[in-house]
Image 1 (cartoon, rainbow, N blue to C red):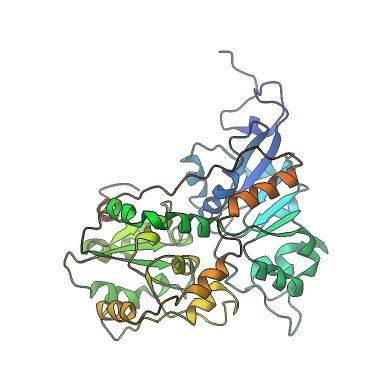
Image 2 (tube, rainbow, N blue to C red):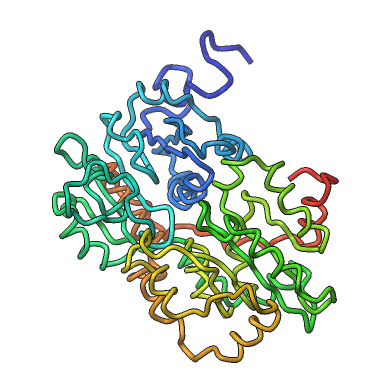
Length: 420
């Protein structure tokens, strides 16, 4: 075949409408996947468009982000070509999909803004722009994140719950006309996966009579991993027998901030005891569904655990930095808290014994006010913004993949016998 002059192999042709393209006159959509967390969340959104012959997707990991390490590698593992931010910023698009407000005001393109976690947990940390006495709102509800120079930046904002719109009425009423409730993709996937719990347990290698403890951590000094010196003795206190398996789920931002090698080094003692260190690119939802216990902090994964059959325990966390109406705050009022003064096995058994029926129902209900409808509602919103008619079929949503055995991740994390 002949080679087109001036067309690079890295994919810049995707943002052009030149004569070398096979599919012509497509609506062009830019996905801003600045971190691995954003990329994983946006995958639920851009996946709704990938089969439409009228749409061409392009991807960038810009503008630069403190936790951007690993995002480009994650996208490229799916066969996605990544555009440099400066090139993407100059190009013309019909829509931008973003899971963060960083840099979106630099684009003269309609932006669809989505959240990247369970509700809106962390309160605004940059208080320099607040007037004395002004209320601190979570990022996606704050004027600081939604407005720039007196105007609302996104063309559309996707929220998970009707409660979000009620709060938006107080925090940033200017954004109400472009706010839409579409639900939460993780809620829908976990609920749909619950009947497959035994399948996931067998895939993980959980045998009859064995119990699975999933320990998860968000990022930051008040996270589970930020207090590893207190957690590690508890984990290592569990009996070394075949009755209990442990998996660690650590936020991708921890790896991006410290590096894979360093995180694995800090967790060597866990690997030596047969604890599985789940890599950041792995699908964590099936592991939550398979768990007997979930031990976690104020991060999203612990809140999503309220949708599963697992008993939940919390590590001590911040109170002033967490929104009082968030799923994390509701969970903090409903779940028991780990104590460093007692063996972990005793605390797990006690929490399971004392668990009340429907103990986490309020938390689960706070995650989405339209469970089971995310992909349908989100697709409708995207096509409205694009000015296209929707495909005449329901959105195709693949089931959660079965995870590999825990023993594979133990081997992969221990020493460097395997690369992730």
